[in-house]
Structure formats: structure tokens, C-alpha cells
Length: 256
Image 1: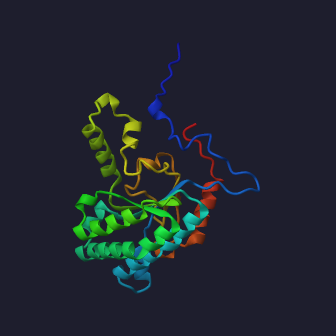
Image 2 (image 1 turned 90 degrees about the vertical axis):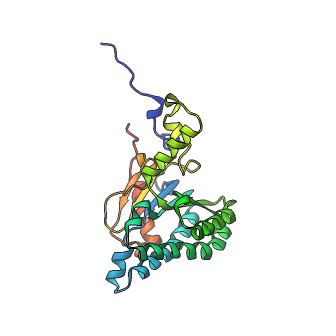
Image 3 (image 1 turned 120 degrees about the horizontal axis):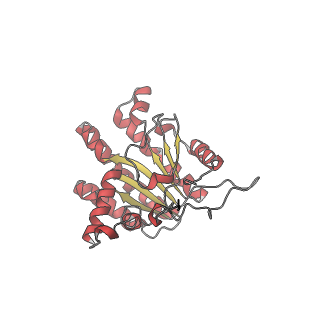
């Protein structure tokens, strides 16, 4: 019986994740992921453990972001994506949602000058048209101020859903006039929110839960998953380094 090659070009691993990637050398520097994503889980549980309000827990979570961003940039990681607010989070109590929006606006205004100094470019992943005008204005200012940063890209997923991102990419492909046969993986990838950053290498989730919660589900196809018990406000550079060390120990096969 004649064998048939069933492989298609669209089934290949992402171009940035192939055998040509450098391997860690014995005694040398560990292999670093180019793109790391974090599901920052555990703010509310952390608050309860410390006898604080949920708002104070979220505030502590915002404070925990800066040292991780600085550490990732110092290490030479190209892109860091953080899950700040999902579209599903709209179902939470309205006061909590308002608190999250206020914290985002305050953090953007406070941190933008330092991000510019560090050469970090900020990108927002999500449906910005669904956000309040004030929040969109703050985001626009940050995007404009940091757009020339080349040291690292910080993707902040806000009002984000992985499934919605794929829907939006398909809609863009249709709006661009592509026919059904022209819509393949490359066409979709080029229209994702993350089209201009490397594919995801490492996905970290804090807080002890072991799921990705609709975060970067297309980009995570070949990502290594790392789950840790630390609640997000307690996640520090040393905890981040432990995740990177585990990543360096793994053998990535990409289906081969």
C-alpha cells in the first residue's frame, strides 16, 4: 500500500519554535523563553488570608507586577504577557469591576514614565471598544508614550478572551477579502492581537489552579505550562526564576 504524506504546511510548529532554537549548554546559561505569559491568580484569596478587602488584594496584585516586569526585561525576555481582566470578569460584582478599572488607570499613569525609561513597549490585548472612555484614554496615552520601546514588549490582556481573539482574527480576515480557502493558520496568526511578538513559550499560572482560563489559547499551542501554589501578590522574581529553571529543564518536541 502506497503511503500518503498527510502533513500540511499549516500543521507545522510556529516558526519561532523549531529545532533551530538554541539549546542550553552544559555549564552555560539556561535557555530562556522568548515569550512568557502569566495568569495572575490569587489576589482575592491573598486578601482573605491577610484579613483585607478584595480591593486591597487587587491593589497588592498590581504592586506585584512591577518587579516581575523589571526582572523579565533585565533577563532579556522579549515579550511578557499578563492576564489583568477577562471578558468573563464582567460577571463579578460591579464594585469589584470598578475597582479593577480604577487600579488599571492608576497603574498606567503611575508606571508609564518608568516603562519608557526601561524601554518597555506596552500593548493592550482585548476588545478596547468595550471599555469606558476614561480607561481607553489612559490606555491610549500609555501606548503612545511607550511605542518606541525595544527592550521588551509588555502585553496587558484587559477585557480579553482567547476565543474572542480568534473570532476577531477571522472577522479581520473576512473584512480583508480573504476567501475560505485563503484562511489558513498563517492568515489567522497575522491577525491575532499578538501578531508582532514571538509565539508563546512558557505559560505560568499562580494560585494553585491548573487551567489556562481562555488565555492566549491559540498562542499556547506549543507552550510549556507551569503551575505554582504562590498567590499572585506573593509571586516575586525568585518564584519567576524557579519557573524559568523548570522551563530550561524540559525537552520541547513540538509533536515530533
